[in-house]
Amino acid sequence: MPARTAFITGATSGFGAAIAHRLLDDGWHVVACGRRADRLQDLVRTHDTGRVHLAAFDVRDPDAMRKAIDGLPPAFAGIDLLVNNAGLALGTAPAQDADLEQWRQMIDTNITALVTLTRRLLPTLIERRGAIINISSISASYPYRGGNVYGGTKAFVTQFSLGLRTDLHGTGVRVTSVEPGMAQTEFTLVRTGGDQDASDRLYAGTHPITAADIAETVSWIAHLPAHLNVNRIEVMPVSQSAAGLQVHRTRATHGAHS
Image (cartoon, rainbow, N blue to C red; front, side, top):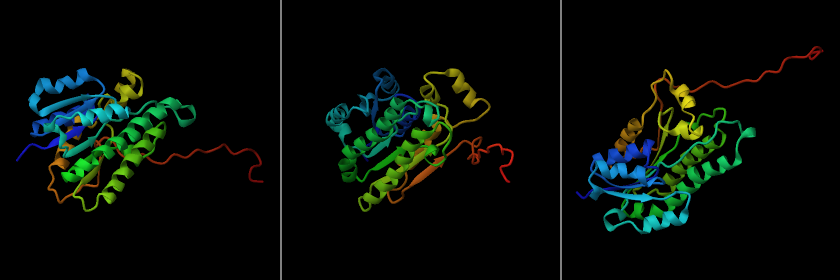
């Protein structure tokens, strides 16, 4: 059986890099995408270069995306699996204090780039009865202070995944939303502008999800029988669970009940 090909965004670090390494270990061909070409080189240093194609571009640049797809070598042009992993969170401030430019960057990366790439690859995925795995987040379901637009973008990814399933009914294309909880990658460093202390405080005393854990989850989904679809899979470390609702109370003034 010829090797299947996976197209993975955000493959320079974290979940994306781990997923790329895992699928290559599983025998797949991989188109590894990311902005940092030097980081992508790690894949060719550790795997058979005949099964890796590197595509260094910013997913927010539609022209660069189009050129990367149009320029795929024949051995990598038949995409069987799209892993929409590229995404980020920026800032932890409440909405009223947030940086609007950071909001726009999250929307452009987490939503606009994801739907643009998905639309471009859908004809191939339909032709090959392939699969789409979108990396969402538990933030799609559980709001928290400072999550505002990041959580909103991930809620879009989750709902978009369900919408794709509906539209692709009868094509054989599988669609899954993977929704991780607390995971120790570069995520918090990016979100806080490189604040290592903030990252260390967040994970102190916990046993968070690792990138390898999510790569294992993606590999399992990718290798399910063609007649099975996992619509959504929510993954948390045991040390994390949903928080309670918050209630703000004002101090009663004299005579308030008179």
